[in-house]
Image (cartoon, rainbow, N blue to C red):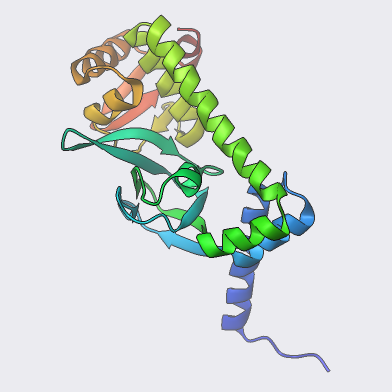
Length: 237
């Protein structure tokens, strides 16, 4: 005899299925058994904007896989928090500290409504023993991040400030932008200081370059929102 599933139970079951499918998408490179082990131990988190996921100096409790939304990672520098990285769907937070540090070396804060999968340290250790391929997957995540850092360093040496900021605008628009009738909108509420830290230039240079791009008609500015209007010219700059 079939069992009747009530509406609330069905809604909860459906939510779990959707979340499992989304996490499975980002773990698609893993072998099926390892993927199932991760999904079985993952804790799903849904956080509103401007929520601190962890703070610099907090004990490392595991890794966070971003499923949806946007997160900024910040590091303390001379008493100020400076933007280091933007993380979006598919990014892994805390992987580097997991192997080398007992405390978080950066803070992580949501920029949008964000959903994450948390894998706590004890669960990860158990998965590593059962499925060593997870370690290779994490190493690939770290390698990809190191490659991006190397690329940013090369750009810092060889590209002028205007070109670096333009490249970063296009990169952020590709990952986090929303296509509108006016152009691709970047609405992460980043300040000029945060853009400057992200690119490695002075805040005054950020303002000058943005206003120059606006004067050319390539972008439009409204508060902290930025629209990319002429993508073709921005991409070849």
